[in-house]
Image (tube, rainbow, N blue to C red; front, top):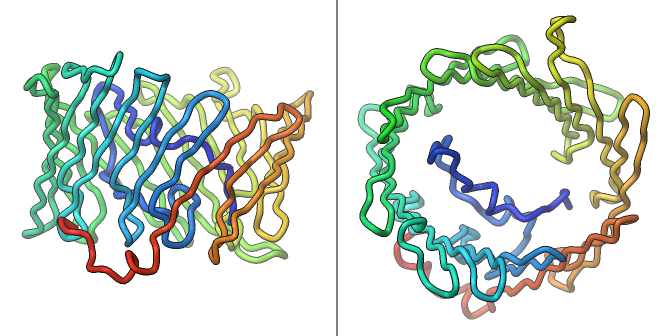
Length: 309
């Protein structure tokens, strides 16, 4: 399966006001990688990023290289399959910038329900933020309590099942911020998963996105809406159609009310037993992405698991 891969780390951990959502451990699958991948260097016409993984496929390090002297390096430390520490080091002119580098420390408690305490501290010893993640009896995230110099915010998650649907409503200090409805629908090609996300500003509807996935979990359409205040409804702005050949993305067609455009995807794969693509070209713009992938050797694969996991 080949998805529309882009550089991921920049958006994974981009912190807006240091606010984060549920803690996630990233694996090879999040980067569209298969097999015993040890590292992956991603090269595009606008920069490069590298990723390193354990033998079990867990992300341990990322490097975002902006130019010859500026880069961000992120390290991940685990204990018994739990993320316990994440460090983001920012280098400018090859010198560590302590004011923008930060460490995230995690304390996990599971009695009576799961609870995770996250503390964010800059390298120059300034406390930035604390987040407390509280989970319900079913192991779902129920609440995030965020404390920083601006005060305390509370994000709550409500789950509403209805027939074959589940709607997750997210509130910040009691004001609706987002709803995510996941449902299934059947057609002649099988069962599709539909994810409808609506975003709100000050509790008022603003925009929405509907994504449809096929039975192989490939994205087949994504449609974008803007809320029309006068009509009091979401109005479609554009829709993307994704086409695959043998599970590999072939082209993306973008349609608006008055326009239609097509992007074609060309992939080159390596010779690994579980194949990974090593070059992607998108036409007609000829944007390219190259991946240099290294694998664990058979000796490394049979060695003892990494310490600290």
